[in-house]
Length: 415
Image 1 (cartoon, rainbow, N blue to C red):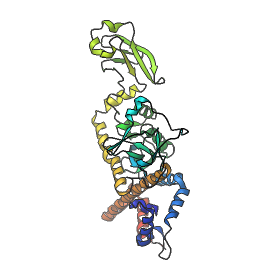
Image 2: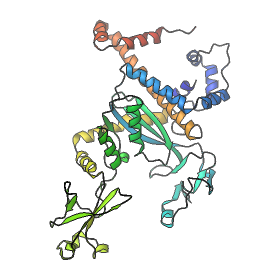
Image 3: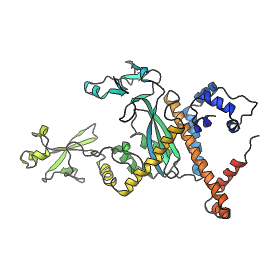
Image 4: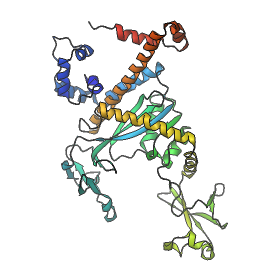
């Protein structure tokens, strides 16, 4: 019954029970004879809570592993993205966090200007650090230009490029950034699912230094553009400064060297500075230093992931990289559009992170089943249209299992 609900976009459990009661095809699919009553809608809620997110994820995983063993998809090329899902809670449910709340934090004066939350035509001075929804505490406030702000969740998809089968579905709060999520989910595909991921495609929201370095260590090729065109340049860092990796120093256009001066951001960023007062008599001083730093020496910043960032900056202008970005748009964004338009993922049905995760897993499962059935029917149609190639097709491409499933699908009749 749950599968019918997500396949046909029936968002209400009460409506689902009524449809199954009246629709003979639904009864046939659920093995419900006419003389047996349909389960009550409250039973669906209790069963769903008793199974929990772990059982739904286990079912999703087992189905994928069966399809992978049958050769339906390879999982070597992965495309990833995330979408916002409107929570089943109103902005009017916001209350101030208690002092004992571990997520509570007092905003500083310079932070308050960034937390004027826009909701429709009304502005509110609220933030996730100061307020929480009383009806759905797991939902967080998100506002992006071009979209309606509000309490939301975020659903992360990873899909096979060739077949568009969803290989992973993960749900977080709406304010969670996508960057750290992607490497962890690829690790899950490689370690837990046993996939041999060789290529990852994603949009610029994932384009950060730690993401590039983590995939470089795993020997996975990435097609992820930089989050910002200035990423890796740092403050006051022109492209005319050359970096010497062996000696770990920069060289300015006048030939003077900038040496490591100090480490910032807990040692993650290095600052290089010219020693000896060469900037005081430099002819390029007016062009090199800004007005606020006329009495200082020139310095530049370097990220620990600068080498990976420079490689991506050179690659993202190539034709192969641009073609991957075009491929990403219709491959993964089309899945989200389909899920929201036909399977009810535009808005959360339930409240709480675990229940919303169940909704996302069932939606992904329904989308995968549609694609697998299409593969079966395509093969069945091809064998019916070209019967004289049947032996060659079955022997050459190992379609025996496909044809067996097709036969069982058409010949099966319930008792």
